[in-house]
Image 1 (cartoon, rainbow, N blue to C red):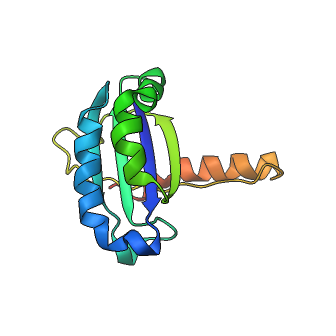
Image 2 (image 1 turned 60 degrees about the vertical axis):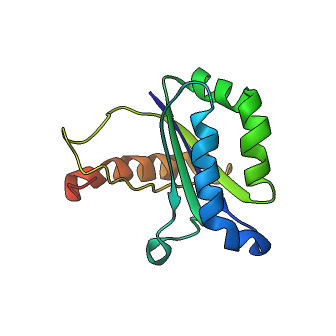
Image 3 (image 1 turned 90 degrees about the vertical axis):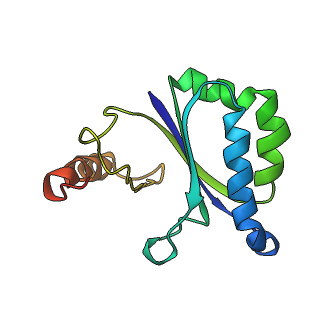
Length: 141
């Protein structure tokens, strides 16, 4: 499985259309090929750092399927007009586990780190290793 995750920040003049954009993105994603799961929702405003207004998470069978979805006519015709002018930050990753526990709560959080190209590789690796320990200390992860 492959996840494509996007955080969208709408321009000031479009913030009043937030709910409409969410509904229309959900509908547009339903027309994309190879989308197994699709969640489009408002970002919880009091618990975010640079997360924007909308989080959009799609699950695909593979990275190739995710790329094919972005090349589909439905992407150009339905998705691009909705995200035009928005700041979009995204990441893609292979899902190693479908859920932490059977029948889980369906609650998930995204924490993305970005390292500058000139960052010390040893420090980057240390960050990666420490981040992997989070589930040990926070069982909900």
